[in-house]
Length: 272
Image (cartoon, rainbow, N blue to C red; front, side, top):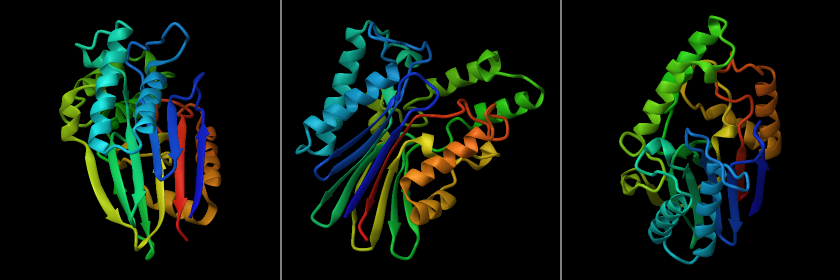
């Protein structure tokens, strides 16, 4: 079994993504800052705080079952926000993190996932299984940005319609999609199961910074090319390929997105 992993900062000052590789436990966590762009007194962003906190709970409780760990992380995240005087009565203020974690044991992969950080199981016949609870939640905002950028608008962050749409989406967290933001309702969206490893050749865990840029937001995430590229070239070259595509569209117009480069956390497990 060969393990590979990488962390790569996006265009921000800090990487809000985290990864965990410990014994038979593997996980990636994508932190999401509140829309008020919270930072603590040490300059840590809300997304960084959330992903680090959730990672630590998994790390400290490696021998516990996943449901126990999730409840512990939920409790700790809520307390962390309260300790920082964050008004958690509004979803838009809450800090959150995606969770994609796999535990290998007795020939099985037990997984738990919520958010838009997928777990990809690749099989001997070349097919693959995607475990991801959230899909294309930013579609409407990205379609709007594509339309506005075509009119010559330089920055989506200065457009009230897009900002209002992002607020609307955030308010639907744990109503129509899952967000690990301390709310109890997230448990309706948790994906938790086991998969026998007999026919599995590779497992990929990644945050959305490693998604291939798409020209049409309607298509959402497309993983066929990503999986094929990874199998031939590996994790690092996949990251380089994504970054080069993004660099070729630095204004985020051809491939509509909110940042030129997003943070990346990724782990690959190769059983071959």
